[in-house]
Length: 201
Length: 250
Image 1 (cartoon, chains in turn cyan, orange):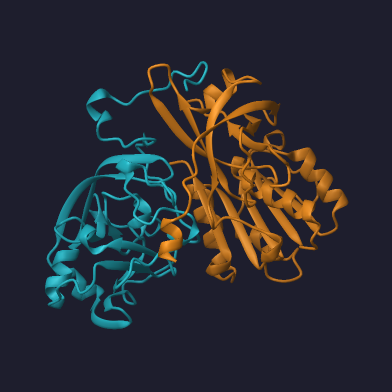
Image 2 (tube, each protein chain N blue to C red):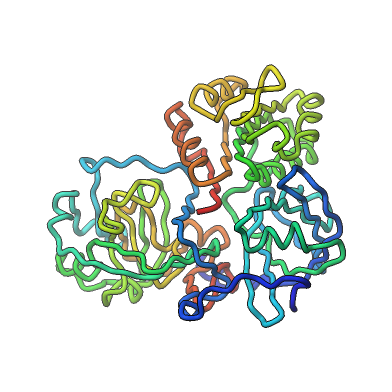
């Protein structure tokens, strides 16, 4: 159905195939958060890998910085309709975390947990194979608190609520357990190219 | 839980007719949309809007519903005219009563309030961020629960205060409601208002108007507005778990 009198503003043709349906380009960097930005000092920061309820490996900030660092430049897509191209991140690949912990993925699913109590679920297949990292730097600078600093998950091929800000752990789960937004009407997987915004999409 | 979620019904796009347009301020208009198929909602939720050009190009945006769920069959959205916007100039300059647009929802399960959530409530809005707070206020009034509420609303000037007359009338008649205005580029017109931006002392004074710490706080506005306000509220001792935020813009 064409909307009477609407013409719109199209993205440059060479960028059009990088923008999923229903998304618009932004040059800014909007923020979607359920609550206040938590304050996490690097001295208190840690990251824990868990299998079910059992912690199997924990890193302090200094230990985490000593892990192999990887750069990743990707397009990102937020369910609130903005997309941002060529965002440049540095951090530790989930593959490298698992290798360091001497762990093969023990279950097919994972929950990311954050300092503010937020959680989000991601299949392990979407975290390994160089697809995802724990990012600590954005465009060469330490990640600011409002964008998830000290560290956030980066799963750029899924809607950006999956890239949990203020992450403090990754928990392997036997089942695909819904996280914070997934319990509140958002899609269990969140593929922007299939426009999986809300449950039932 | 996973099974229940994956089986949730798809919410389809549908046509809605613009039934009424009301000017709120020089830069803000209200649009009352009547959907073909009414879906009720929770106060605070948003509606997705989709516009389609003749060649098929589409664009989507989300707008908080400002009306109460009890306004049967109609969703009120407020649209602020942004000069460099793609959507808002269409709404302000082109859209007319009787036009059809596509909508989907309402959606959102966190920035919501119902009578079962109780109070007291602190609502803090910046500019058009008042929309979901208005839905909460109107819903609270409609269901008639005794929940104390303070709304601290920020605007540039007295004439930029969206819903000013409705809010002032409610302030005068509802003993459990208090309105405080923070005008960044104007002088205060009422003793309880201030002619400056929201800061920590103002939030402290606002909290003092409630007999007890708010059970829930809702903050909606631009990214820097919400970041500053929610940070001050945590500094003032509110539990982060009780503060719900919604941010718009880049």
